Length: 249
View 1: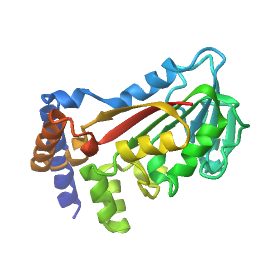
View 2: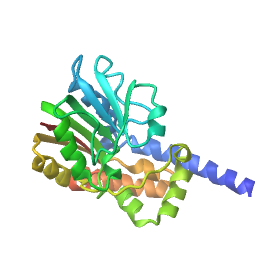
View 3: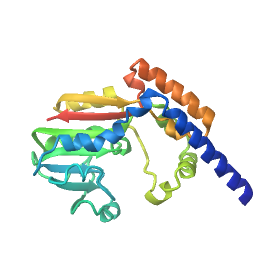
């Protein structure tokens, strides 16, 4: 049994290595909006800005870009917040009910991979609007619910999905895998919800790359890369993988 598991891991590692090398040959691989997120938050802040980092348990993704700003980490889990050494001001809160700051009191509300875990993303958007000062920015990054990997995540039974997540990413056992609902998690739906809540000038940037989820199997990764290349060439935003939104209050 141990020998079989060892062989399986070697095969997965080899497939992953080849798949990653193949992915780098595709132009859409390099349009990584996830890596832009910290820079975008930094470019929309200034010294002394008050920034709410929603889902700020464990760490802050943009602390280096905003080291002269006042960052407030907000998370639903007190245990996760206790592990955050990047931010001193840490507050527990359910952002669909109440972001624990006053009306019109902050300059930026930022979140990364939070929206997909909320049952009522519209309530989060309304709360972000409430706490932002006029001219403030709501910046959020989330996976598109119409991307193949998110569709698979929703279709698979929860137990099977967790087993796959743990097999592909062992550290998921340490950080936990939170349930995902993908409410309003598409470029068009999120844009409309922001406008309906009062935001103006809603800018959306998308990323089509998602094949790292399939690196463990070279044929799957190759099919995924070709699919991504096709939808990116056709600029089918509706089928993108990641969505980065910047909305102005």
